Image 1 (tube, helix red, strand yellow):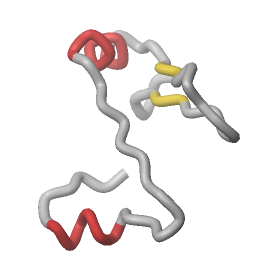
Image 2 (cartoon, one colour):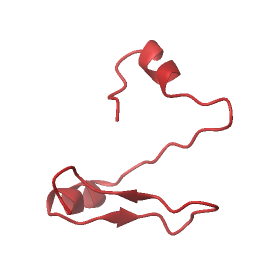
Image 3 (cartoon, one colour):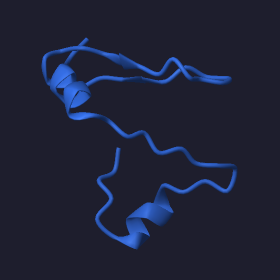
Image 4 (cartoon, one colour):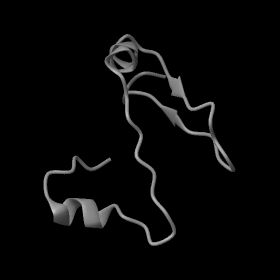
Length: 56
């Protein structure tokens, strides 16, 4: 993942086919630090899961 700091960074991550922004709550961020994996129940074709590196 790239931390977006400039508009150029954002453009490097933008797809012409469509884009999606994932917004996390503080509760979800805390859960990630505690080792949890987050899953998006509102998926369409592909499921989305988020976890911190090193947490399996």
